[in-house]
Length: 124
Image (cartoon, rainbow, N blue to C red; front, side, top):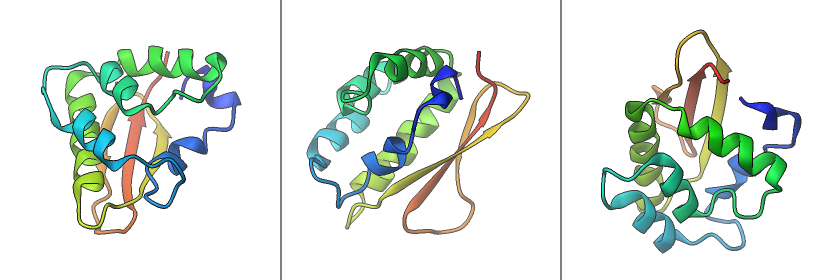
């Protein structure tokens, strides 16, 4: 995780909780489901994931997301879209593991509710 790791990043695990006040399923489905060529950072803005975060958190996270390989960003979008688009929508939890490779994203290899998204890799 980038320099924002010094801050409380629990909001990432609370944001996609259907029980959260302000959860906007229609917004998320629209942001995650359209034009496959949009950059990950644009989708994050469209979803509003970092809207309420201080610049000290928002800026390093957006810079980090901008460095992700396209395949990893596409997989994240696919996993999030499947979770928020399911009936009923599923909560999403993120697990981060630092590694020696560029960022890789995958879903947990076991069916869970909430959906677990595993992010592995390096950060600048």
